[in-house]
Length: 142
Image 1 (cartoon, rainbow, N blue to C red):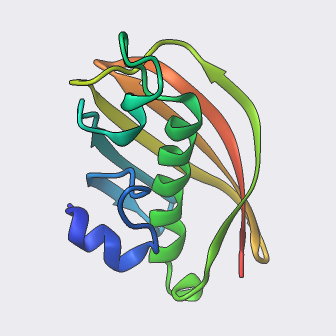
Image 2: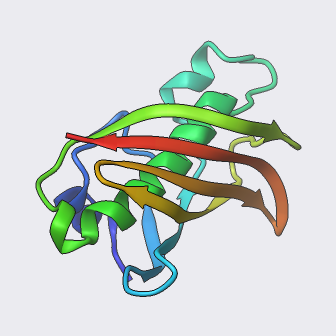
């Protein structure tokens, strides 16, 4: 549905912090969710220092990828276009498996509540259909 260049038109993130390669599905009318993915490459800069002998994608970057997925949903809504998204908190984060080079990290984030400029999303990251990370993500829009 959206490639990297189209994603960059919606959210302010850029390399090396743009962690979504493609958006596959999005609903900003009813359920307010986005499904996308990141191809995890051995060339990612963080693999040089995060267990270089057995590279594992840091959990904090998995959470960031989920947050960016939610940001695509929020900033695609007309009333929030042009706003700056800020990470406001993480609740109930769980890591259930490792993500390694060659994996495709499937990302799903549903926005479950918005009240004014504050909101909550629930994100799930998976590899080969198995959940590797999930969290409740709080955001603020300025």
